[in-house]
Length: 453
Image (tube, rainbow, N blue to C red; front, side):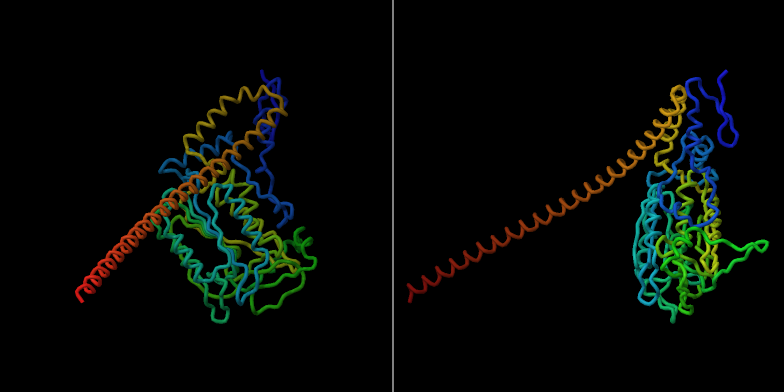
């Protein structure tokens, strides 16, 4: 009988005589999703990486979820297209009347890095007025998403109760803002998104109140490593016009008070950085607690968990953060989703091809077991690198194809213009000849008149 080895969680794995650690055990050891959430948030080291943990194609249970999503009666939303969909990001940093949202560029970079690896096309708009926000959103809401599985919108700006401000937001008149319910309705009315998940993430305050939190059993809450390190020579402030800055740390809130209605329709998911009537916090150098938590959780756990569980982790992390004045925050989510939403990172292939790759790996298992642990590990790392390079190559090839088509279109337009110019030149030449002919006729008449006279 083959010897066994005990792996993670006490599970026994069969190993071959030539391999001290079984191939699958090596894969489990590499799997970073078993790491628990940080005890405090934010953690400086946790924010440095943008690398997404991809699905282990030998994970039968997760592969089964992927296979099940093909069925119309599945309880899992399908994610079958190479490009999952668009991630639209509106990132407002500089305002006419309101305070600058320092650190928001870090949030924008994090979203772009993580969601592009999850198979989305990320589109970023910076510093939009209310009118510009509305125009971009209305234009995006009218796009054809037939070849997409999902739509995602991030708005990072100043906000109030149920609304987000443009860069021209006016606090006194409470104008130049869009209601979250209006934004949801825009995309709910798109027929090509019918039955598909529509996700909205709002990094903005929902009021002016600050959450002081509370301790359990009289034990005071702790300040995270992130705040203690970053508090030097910076200050935290509320974006409310009615409060003064407190010179301590880099955490700032995104709030301006106003009222707005709410609504919901099927397959809609809305998450806000904070609960109603309260401010949300953002670090001047590292970004907001909320967006950075989304980046951390999605890149590490999207390979195992569905959206609802991912956002529970985000809420857990955000609730652990606090300023040096012990102000707290907790994010909130509301949804009308009908199924589980898995992102299936790195399954950017048609269903049949993914299944084939899985079956092919199963056939190679016996060969893999006969190799030494170091060779197994190197092969796995090399395979992941090659797969990533292949995905990048495919993306580049598609971009080149698009550029080629654009060049052909421009060439056709140029040829059309050249033909029109040539036709115009011919007409000019014809007119010139006609004029010369008329001049010649005139001269002939004058000569005849001279003879007669």
